[in-house]
Length: 460
Ligand SMILES: [Zn+2]
Image (tube, rainbow, N blue to C red; front, side, top):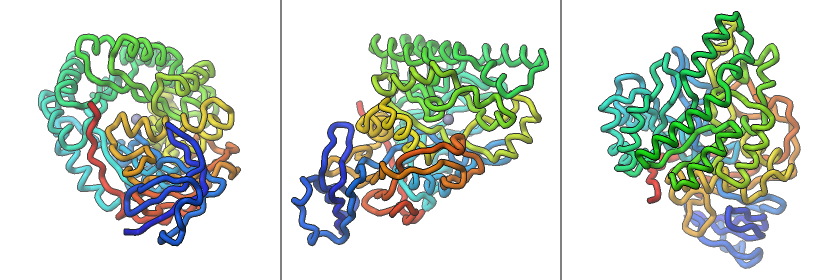
């Protein structure tokens, strides 16, 4: 087995920070020792990490690779998406197996699994996606959990496209979730409120992009989160609020946690760094996502919640589509723009630049939010940690490098960067995924045959 020594870096984990050398044997971390205690002669390769932060490879639990959309697909598939992951310091990514009406959750997972084998630079896993809360879908949940897919998402909105999960179904799904050891992920926006406001804006002749934010207000998200919390009081089962974006969302989740409910919340990089003002320009459609970008006081509260709780994870919700396609499909109106932005690669750099450098979070919190917490919450055993015995998923992060973020300086399969022109600091320099160097000196060096599907099991 190949032996690799990573020496003289500043090791940063959720629990400790300090100068250590790390010995990797085969796919695993063997030991950490003080610098100089290992003998370089005992290793096949020695990687100098002087001046670098050595952290667990990132875990990205929320992307939409290969998601079908109006005859097309999202920008990233497993191949291009995991390539962008490698550049972004990510060693494990969880996407969604897409359900269409009338199809089996189990079969979707099998199809997704078959389709993606041998097409990933880093390790990957999947969540179920319940568009169709039929009796069959609900009855399949225990088997889905046993297949290593213990998490699945539903929506409280998009009634028109048939995705809305009503309260009756959600109670049943929560019941099955409680029985089978799963966790329900919920996209929270109160559908009737959004529909009412959209219809009203359209009737008044509004087409401007900013009306996307006006018609999907904070109150709609807050109501939907509160609804999930209230349903959990009847059927107590683990739930995870995806992309919480409002100041009040974190208050509601905090209160629910204080009441003893097993609820968790993530936010996404764009909600922490961009406001709805992005929608006001001519190209505002490019920043349309749901929930929409919010106001500056929401951003402040999200940073605080990421630092002190209850936000446990920051994901990217990567879901870009080609800009021209988005514009064409919009027909110039805010409510027809396909939702979603790319973002899988810049997450680490952005959180470092805006979070660590501006002292909104520290380095250890950065690691917790981007690897340790999502690994634990989503049942990725042996990931998100540098403990001996864990998978040797290790990100060597260069904190000094200054660069300008643009669509062309990133490696995502997109023509749009939501943070175009932003001056940023820090970048993944070298990345190991189960001991194999998949990024070396800022350049991809891995192979798509390396990434392996991770079978997940949630902790009790
Ligand atoms: Zn999403």
